[in-house]
Length: 562
Image (cartoon, rainbow, N blue to C red; front, top):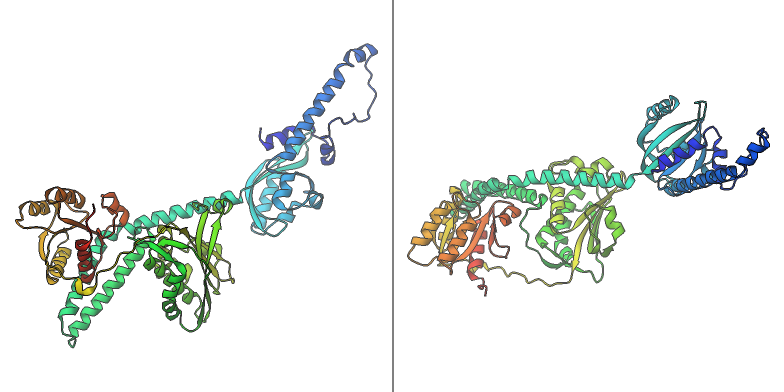
């Protein structure tokens, strides 16, 4: 039986009595009120003498059980008289609102008003109740300590035996936490939908950018530096590079960027990026970095974390055009279950926390709700993907980001990354002077612009290059080429035969051939197509000539697995 049903049942038993008398009737063993002497005959009285005390005791026990249920109900229960004065509240009301019973008896429920509902809201409520109808709804109220909370309520009129309204009873539930979690879930679902859209454009866009950047790079190398066309080629390359950065931010936001994580210290990372941050902020903004002693390590991609910091610094500069302060602080934190329950999808555990706090104008709740969405106007201009990529980088690093901000009170971004104890081996990059080679490389790519670019680049570095436009053509080359093929460089998504199927056939035909995949697809799409997740086997589009030559050399020089 719900608290509402219990209370109404009790009130039905005691209808017509005043609220104070109602509560007095809760006490078991209450004496029968004085009244008119019974006029029953002695015989009748003697016959009912055994039943009446038993019936009265049963009624008293029933009242006691109902009173106990009302007192121990999880919902707040309020009884008011017809002028709105409070006559009874249960312990749940005290727990939720912070008011003691004696502080509210005789007061009007308006002591809880938050100002969040207009006067018309309350007029409609009282019109419903005055008409003898039950009102159902939710509103935001204010606790004794000033904090706001949201509650759902059912308020019903209580009538006496003549049908007149003598009391109002409200059964109210605090749904603040439930509403907050619902909003967190809606926000996560909205971000996920936008992320899928952002990641979906990556493949074709990256193919085009690979060609634009690659050929512009070749032109810069080939054209005389004194001629006007050299400058034009450099501008094309710069524009392509900016477009590639936009694509990387989209992939970062959609948590589909290819990361190269390793064990790192956030204190060391801050030391390396500090000068860049100071240049980005400029002299009007004072930067302070507070490093915790004995800070734990995290497992993350240092380049991506640095990028996230740069985006946060850029936002700070935007919201503080007249100057201000930016404080970056690190700390070891241990999040308990209670904290995790207040933040949807967050797990309790040991973390390294990095807090980035500015003294800017702060944000209201609406701005915070859309802060990490692409092209959000919450940062002021709404022109970029900076904060959305910060969100994606942190999430893809198995971390969490929280925002604390109030209008006029600045903003704090808290980034939580899991603390780790394991050590990770780093990959030593190939020096520029060792990028050249003489091996034979089979390149399989269905985008003609990219195929021609890679062939030209690798030929320029001394390699013998075989080319194929799709998987089946690549298989024919693998089967018919008379000499060794040292490396198969293939796109993942190909017509007629996918890159992973081609790699499997290549492993059977030529076990000595190394495999290097390339793709403009987001990482999760690549993994679904079966690309091994080992370092050195994947080349992310768009890439420049130096990047493809370096990755080819790294793959050829990597020690073979046992």
